[in-house]
Length: 109
Image 1: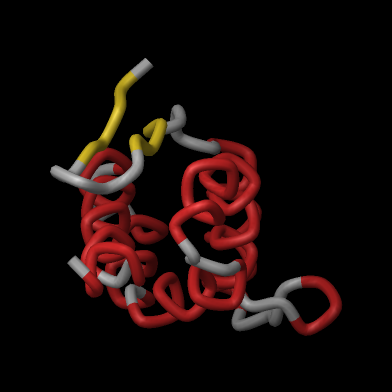
Image 2: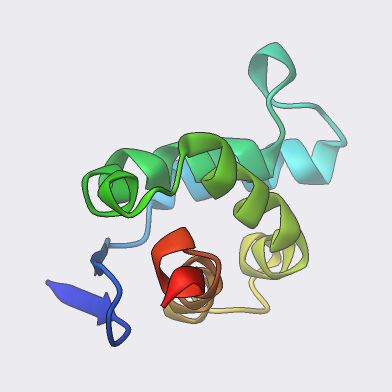
């Protein structure tokens, strides 16, 4: 298991690439479809990752809404991962860094 950690920040597990989710999101993107129930590709991957990172982020004051906003702001990199122009490790570590820089606890330090 790989871990992403910033000094003074939470330890975030870097999960294995969600191949089935990626395939479904990529297909929806290529077909120009919206994801189920109005969820876009960024929100889907955000909710999937939130399920893994929530225990580390909530105690730092980082809410689900904050996290989804960070993922939406990282949309371009998400699309590059879905299209095969970025590796999963590049996407997920970049997003973890983005989240770490936006933590309320880190901002108050």
